[in-house]
Amino acid sequence: MKSCLARRVLAWGALGLVVPILLLLRWKLFSSSFGQLEATLWPSAILLMGLDGPSPRSTLDTVEILAMVIGENVILYSLVGLVTSPIVYLVLRKRNRPS
Image (cartoon, rainbow, N blue to C red):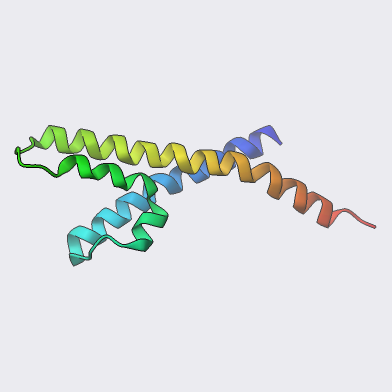
């Protein structure tokens, strides 16, 4: 159970890394606007408002802010995996138990 839980949390964390990268690529390649879908899949993206402002930012500052916001999304997705995995495990175990 513990190794299974760790794998699921890692999988959720990896998903939390891939989703923002895909959304950023979508934004850069297709010039799509940020909407409800992005806000649902990447809730920590609201912190990207730190990139707006009158003063010019260096590339290092931009990369640092993006890394922090993506890292927060990985943590958030990992927590979702940590909470939901035992519930799913128990439900599947109960459902597969012979009567």
